Length: 409
Image 1 (spheres, rainbow, N blue to C red):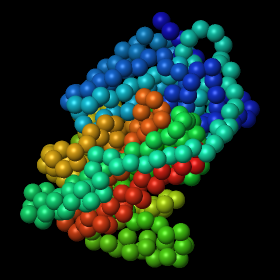
Image 2 (image 1 turned 90 degrees about the vertical axis):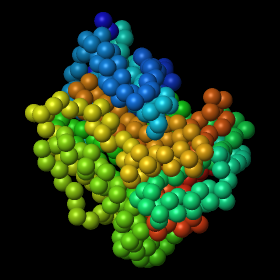
Image 3 (image 1 turned 30 degrees about the vertical axis):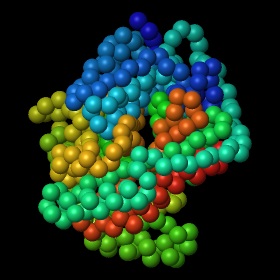
Image 4 (image 1 turned 120 degrees about the vertical axis):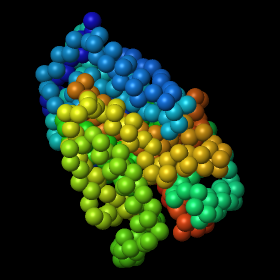
């Protein structure tokens, strides 16, 4: 049996995204300087199908059973870590990765976990050197006009009573003359969007503002975002826009669907839940969102509940799919004309105790095998009051974090 060893890191070190190891940086989950980064792969696998969350649970338990864990730090996020990046659609592949080495940081406390013989790996510090790269942009599955046409079709379906809301996504392609550095992308995203969760699992990299589920002991939290307005850069103007967003009937309707889908999904597993009466406005660098933090206390008395159970119940929420779910999926398949892959799927980490943080893979891009191309994604919630031109502008605002991170490499 292998023995993962976890020990506290003493003294100062570089920010997580700038640490180096003998192994290549393979995974990350960073927010405001805290989080986890992984180097190398001890084991990895893919799962798919309607039972992919059950398959993931079984595989993780199998790996844990093969380990003799030596953890001198304890607490959430310590010990061996499973990084997950699930597909949006059950028929696509989801990726599970257990890094060889994991470095964690939380509230000025740092630790390292490694699997294998020998002492603690030596960590180095490497500040990514940004060099100008020429990026060329091209249309994705649909050009702007065609995508706006699909939004108009969706609005008509909603007005006719076929469904209440659907999330339509689009993609664009970026090509670089040289290899795109995943480490530099992570560093740029972390610097510009510190309040988001910056993730890297496999070839999927992004900075999501939306937390699908955090499970810490028995407390479950889900941050729901729906309803968006672009910032102008003028503080007074943006303050006024935030007020209009908070009163927008179209955005409040979209947000209500998303919050309801999350609270209803959590209810069977919680002895109590707390859903605020009204959302708050979340300010990011480039946009503002209506946001609601739904919390609950998991009740294990009726049936066993773990983070995989909660993920399976929450995904896909109305924030990335629509309402009702089955009809929204059908409309997505009919209108989007693209494979989302792991975009808008659950992404994050799970520890040996079953605690973890799982976000929704938004504001992200998928690196090609040659590392010279990357496919960026953005989606918009469509309701009866949606305007195709405004939805296109919103999608462009949501593409901005990755576009900016690429253009400043």
